[in-house]
Length: 231
Ligand code: ADP
Ligand code: ADP
Image (cartoon, rainbow, N blue to C red; front, side, top):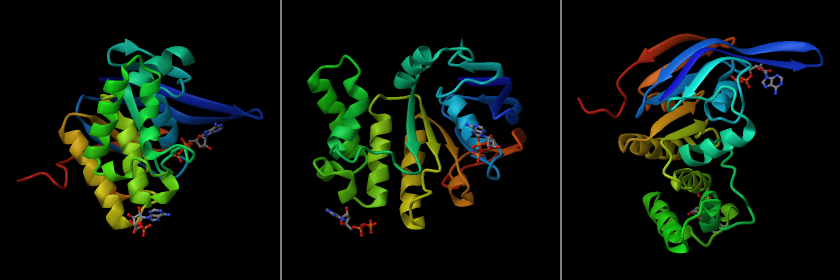
């Protein structure tokens, strides 16, 4: 589903060139749960931004569901992004002026769907994340864990094949963080591909593969059984 060949990303700021990613060769198949780890500044966010079609690589090939998207322009990337990818962030990125229901509805507004279909999808996502009773509340009336549930509900309303999560438990206490990880694991069990950047070894335990970056290069790829897998 995702393949990169010699992916490279360079930034130039005030004539200083930084190679954020170099020679990154990855294959991520449908249904995988992958954790990307590594020290600060090693290129994790850069990689997630490229995999999430938010930014282009400087060089190399990038195949997304069979299409070579490396040189797509912003418009083409946005079209593909809206229907294929859900995003979950450390800071939730909810819109404070909108209710929970309206936040979840947002990605659907831009699609030509009937109001019945929109209502059905939002309601289903609210129920799935067990926040149905919170629909008319505003984000600031919710705990951090509940806000992250809203963000996950928003990420799944378009039925994306992939969820990209950037430090999804970074602002949560450990118990709440594990609840959020269990939700991501459930989504993965039902077929959604999950690619997650994390510093947390506990979170990484939920994945089935850890890709480690160092100075912009992949140094190891471990495949293992998820912690919750039955023997
Ligand atoms: P990580 O997410 O692992 O902390 P990043 O992908 O944010 O790493 O950064 C990788 C490298 O690229 C770092 O050296 C960082 O300073 C640099 N970098 C990231 N974004 C930019 C940018 N927009 N402009 C210039 N340099 C950047
Ligand atoms: P947690 O312990 O899960 O972080 P809190 O202690 O912040 O949650 O809140 C406990 C409960 O009260 C949660 O269900 C939360 O959504 C609710 N709550 C917290 N603050 C408000 C508020 N300002 N308005 C309405 N409900 C709130």
